[in-house]
Amino acid sequence: MTTQLRIGLTGGIASGKTTVAQRFAELGVPVIDADESARMVVAPGSPGLAEVISKFGESLLTADGALDRRSLRNLIFSEPGRRLELEAILHPLIRAEMEHRASVASGPYLVMAIPLLIENGGRGRERVDRVLVVDVDEQVQLKRLMERDGGTMEQAKAILAAQVSRAARLQAADDVLANVGSLSELRHAVDQLHQRYVDLARWPKDHTGQLT
Image (tube, rainbow, N blue to C red):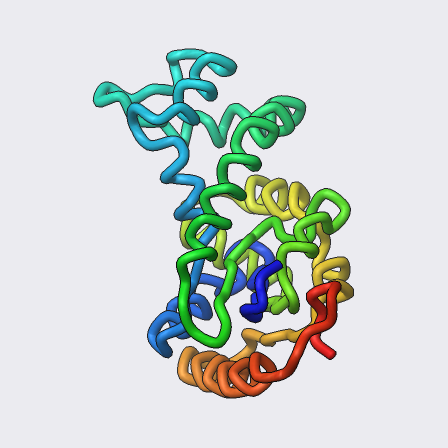
């Protein structure tokens, strides 16, 4: 852990994490996004893509040599055991990519947007100083998922069931952004957190990396 304050941004699918991350970026905060890093490590011609195709087959390649993400997503949801195989390949690559980007980031603090931050027993918690959870009611998540992806209620419920529970996320949170109002209200809440994090970044840390 560096001396730079790290905020781990997480939340359930369709909770508003992207909106929150965008607002932090607008405020000049370095935002290191796990999903963006995940795309980079399986870019056409990358070693990561070669390893995925070696494990899962060339049927997951598009005509132009890119990863067919929809086919891969369908595969791991239909065969849950294969999801663990995929994560074993990608997670170390994604983590290394994010750590590299963090090492060159400037500013009093940075945001690491990691949807799976507290999955797998919360091992990702060691990568950040504070956990910020964007929270929303599960019924709202289901509605947004169906509107966004055009799927059924059953499909949306299956996606939520594959994630850590809302209660577990809230228990792991140091800070919670309740996305229950308007877009402007959510952005204002981010602005308030930004000032708080700037202030916290001035505080010393002990050897564990926790704020003292």
